Image (cartoon, rainbow, N blue to C red):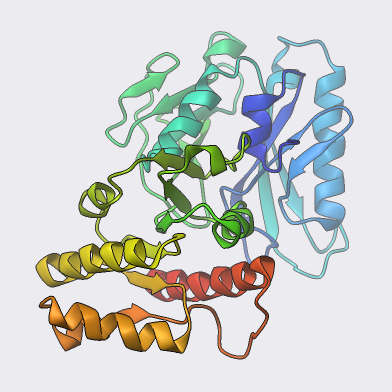
Length: 344
């Protein structure tokens, strides 16, 4: 499977590349600070907004790749680009782009793993000559307490915040640093069921800012290649994962057995009654299933108020197609609405 985003490309490709990061965004800009793309001699992965800005960024990155590795100008630079006057884009803002030549992929594998585990990380990159002794010391990966996870501990102690428009900081000597928040996506979906609809939903969520834990006892149903934001849990005790899930997780039940659907639904609803920290609970099925399950679960002691938390049928109103891809697109849009509302 070809990589689809910058981090996936960094962890799978073994060719010279330059990572381009929007370090600062002023005014109206196509992408926010922190947006990235990876540029190689013949391809690019992900986007910083398209248009002439992206063309210019690719040209700068490829110029760096043509220069001898190890020279400062080939290792990193910071470029200011005005979108209106110089690039002819209607946004009218100004972006500052950080360019860095990529070496070992060890740090990127570590970063990818931490993001999959829901752990935040910070990248610290020296942008000015003299801020680091060698190109290898240009970047460090830090945990939220500024403890180095990879690379040497820098003398500069950055402020670790997530300013939405600016990733640039200066040290006491006035040297500039990229202090890049690599935050794990907050939305987390526990998806029970590896059937056709479950697989289609995983594909629909593959490039969205979320994490998915995909759960089924039938290990053979999981594909060999899975998206970077998905973790597989092949288990015959899926209810354990319900209790262990972080607060504000979402749950979606779509297994191959009605009895298992009911069992998992009961466990999720009991968690809601105990802790009331479930963001959303969806259950695949028809209006008939929506009527039957609450009746059965009420007999097992679940209160009407808790039963009202079940979303069934799932998906956006007005989308009637039954094909797995159609259901998946509808549910993905529904989840995006929930996650966007929660982030307001």
